[in-house]
Image (cartoon, rainbow, N blue to C red; front, side, top):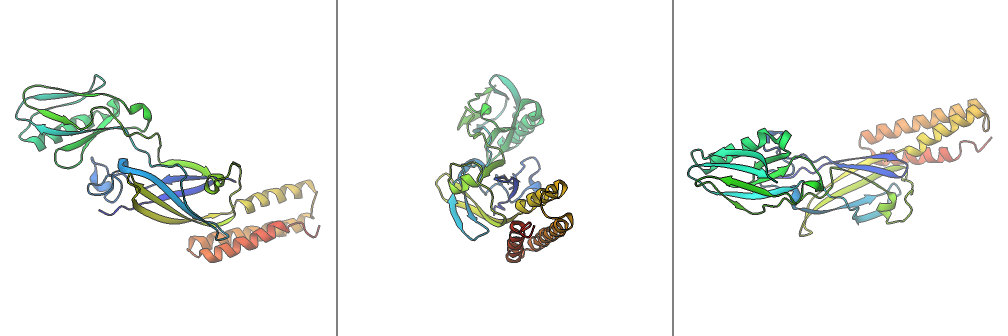
Length: 297
């Protein structure tokens, strides 16, 4: 199954981005809602990912290659098990002594496993744990929420007669503390110690790569983002100068502000229509105008 890797990125202030991995997660309770994302049977399991890297092409065409920002996709705590035998009887499932589900032996092992999954998932909103089947009789019991606090929980089965489970892990592991959203700045991209390094204005080209735990690349995807904070900040500053009467005459500033707004709108339209080269040229003109706004005062 092909993974459709996806992300969103936006500027949240003059020196930081907010990144969100928007790749869908396969929902084992509604499987058709995501057929090409993480945890799809036959595709990559999110808990098998080891690291992420970013390659960044700046507006001036300088390149930062394979920078590790320390981001990982959010993973949740899990138990791994197999239903290994059964002919009759019942089984109650507990996490740290709290009941999360139960089942009777029903027809065959596969039917019994599905009955167990239905039982656990029917109370997942209150118990905090959910179950899904991997392949065959192998299955996972996973925390509903992210968080390291769900690691190191103890899973126990209280069975009667011949229902038997093989524990691959009976202590929950795997939660890494991340969610899907991550904030970072130009300092992290460049490897600088200064935390307020400004984001360059213009068109940025970002390639996001995910790797498995053996450092083998699983997938990559590239997107573009338009950064125009400098123009917006300049407009605000010039309007304030006009109000205070400390710079050019009001009419002159108004003309320049209108011209600058036209450049911003033009760059946005070009960017939205995938004409990134023209959008960058428009931003470059805008930056020149921004630096010369009061040159003839």
